[in-house]
Image (tube, rainbow, N blue to C red; front, side, top):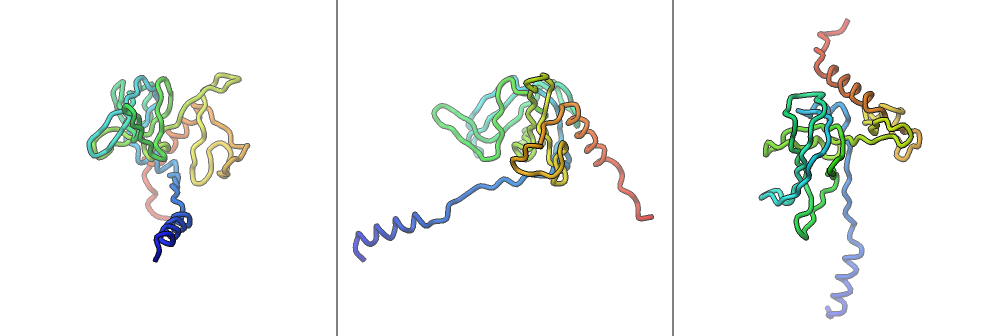
Length: 190
C-alpha cells in the first residue's frame, strides 16, 4: 500500500469514528434524599482547588451551615467536588457542580471513600438558592420527584411552565420526603 493511500485511509478512519458523548441521567429526588447523610442549607465562605494524589485536581469549599434538615454537623463543613484549577492546569468533570464564594444552596451530602463530604449525584446534590428579581424571595429550582417536578407536573425539557419554588416550600418537601422514608412500612394488605 502506498504512503498516500495509507494516510488517506487513516484520515477517513478518523472522520467516520463515532463521536463520544457523556450522558448524565438524573437520580430521582427521593433517592438523593435517602443517600444523603447530611442535608443542610448554607453559604460558601471559601473555595480552593488542590492536587490530591490518586484523585487529581479537586475543589474544596467551606460551607457555613445556616440550617440542618437531616443529620448532624458543626457550624462549617468542607464540601469536596472533582475538578478545579491549580496554576495553569484546569480539570473539568461533567456533572460536577462549581461552587462559588458567597453562593447559597441546599446541600445533599454523603461521605466519600476518603470520608470527605461530597454532593450526592454531583450537581444533583447542590440546589442553588437565588433571589426572585422582583420580590427578592428566596427560590430554588424544583426537584424531580417520580418523573415530575414538585412545582408543575411532568418533566419536559425547556417547558416554560416549569417555575422555581420558594425556599420554604423546598425545605418542606425535603422534610416530607425524609418523614416518608422513616415511616414504618405497612405490615400486609387489608
